[in-house]
Image (cartoon, rainbow, N blue to C red; front, side):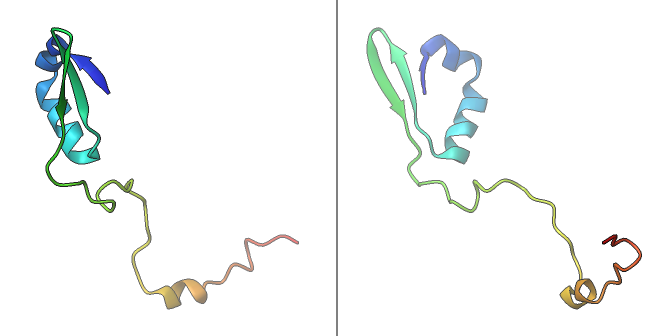
Length: 73
């Protein structure tokens, strides 16, 4: 992503957090030259996974559920 220095100044903290969480560098254009903002450590692939809903409990309880009242052939 390429932005201007004034755009960086407006959103510096959110842009810094974005670089740290995604690992995607930001290029800042200043007086016709490019400055690249890159994290020193790559972002973990597991950290970038979206949050999902999940069931908690014993898997055996799911196997033995009675769905006969819900099922229509």
